[in-house]
Length: 279
Image 1 (cartoon, rainbow, N blue to C red):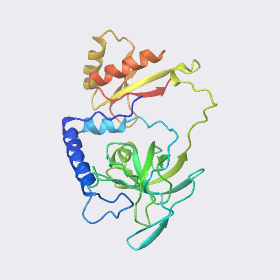
Image 2 (cartoon, helix red, strand yellow):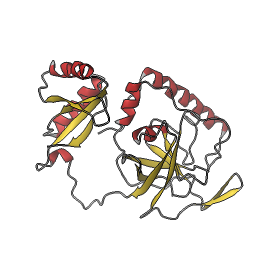
Image 3 (cartoon, rainbow, N blue to C red):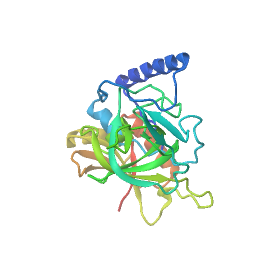
Image 4 (cartoon, one colour):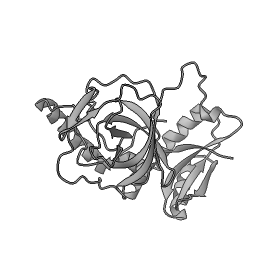
């Protein structure tokens, strides 16, 4: 499943400005080693409910082998007069602490790895882990989790352990609270010797697609009607535990069928689908 967030025109405008900022940064030779956060208030982007729903449904990035970035991995670095050390290896790293997020103030700026920060992608900043590295972050208040790619340095506040992108904070449902207690677990690439099985090939447990997040059953029925008109009869309306409604499609029997449904849901602007097990 693609991890690309399909932005609205509102967000496309932000992307355009981010490209301008990135180009200017490249022209001025801005430093891409760890840099302080500076002064001024950070803020969340102005998004609709539908756009926030899309961010909540962003699929986790695939965990793959990563080469160390050319920048941001010095053994020691200094920020605001304090020296920080970078770990030689991330293997087996687990920790619990407070997570915060960074958003519009840094969107389009260079990260410590040299990449441009995109608040709509699932990334994060950590003071001491080698970068880049994948990690699972779990909100200890509500049990929600997401996978992020750590590619930046920070947060430079002793009481905080990790800075998540705005999209990751939305997935963990603390973008309004600002901070949350979390558990971090570094993830390693699965062994190439292990057989790879797609979840929809598991014959003991069927899988379904959940798509959309509708505030009323009437809205869900309208979306259902759009799918039914195209001959898809395996769609149901379900009530979500956190409130609202979604569409349940399946069971999914084949990869071509999965790809077709994903494309259909995105084309109809119903939302990014999530693959879930079901009875």
